[in-house]
Length: 421
Image (cartoon, rainbow, N blue to C red; front, side, top):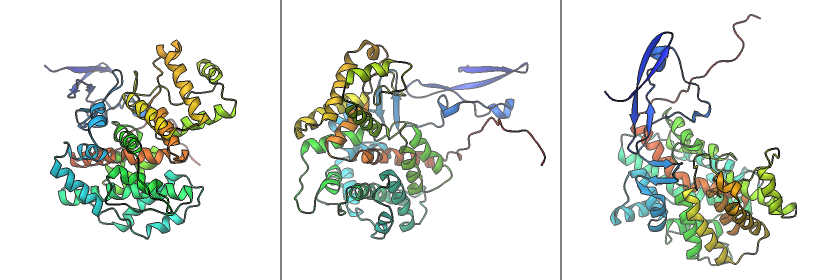
């Protein structure tokens, strides 16, 4: 007999099967729990709840493993482009040369945005947070592409996917240009996808722009590292919004909003803000390392440790090298980045942090790179969203193809009992 779990309640025993994934992950199948027992589980934050079966991303936090469709994140960052990884996540396999050429051509042909979207952009004050702007612009795509997508039609699905992948970096770059007070740039079809991101964000009207290989390589790695991360807050949001059969654009717009928070995509912004506050207080890193170790001190060292990884974040190993290359290439003398280097070195040598495996994570190093590239702090999460886009699309598509039921968590009611006026 296959493994199962028995639950005894009110002198009755109920049996629930064990389900097992392809990487030996195990879970208790409680689909019939309420029907059989009248009980529900209580799991705040769903930390112990598997909401779906998924064949997209495997994450083992204890061993520091991250794989997309079976490929290690290390190998993908070394050998693949971001657009190849996007294809892998969405369609399940790495593209052949012919498939990749077609995919790139389709994206180039759709790299235009309705001019009326500029009206939405102009309606925001310059001080508006870029993530709010990006979420609104993504929602705005719905107005200009109102037809619902038939998930049974491969042609319609591909058209919607191409449209979003092609237009999203334009919206992200426009958000950046709005913050900086710069004229809006359009895609250059002669460039690769990642080169185009750099072109649209950084090209000035009075200068030629040729992105350096180091810049493009660092951006490529950052986007790949952020492309998917299993059932995190924003991905779960995309899936649960899509479970109502809301369209792809609406679901991704909700994902953008979920990513905004400082406990999720805003973590790399929080790293730089912490570094700036340390600098403003004199830049004494030893003082702040001591504060971080003091249980009675409210100070929190941002960018160290991870909610899921109980070992070194595998993405951090990769992006640390890219951060070093970018800083060397640009020759930047930034006291805030010097503070970051000092914190990193002290944490990697300090037994307190080593014993607790509080290593610098991907947010720590990505914040350093974005700052070095001149990207405003409030734009960091927009760059995260740009990388996460193919993961959101893949997760939404998988959920719809699996015909998953509408998301509807239960609750334990703790309010007032029945009363009269």
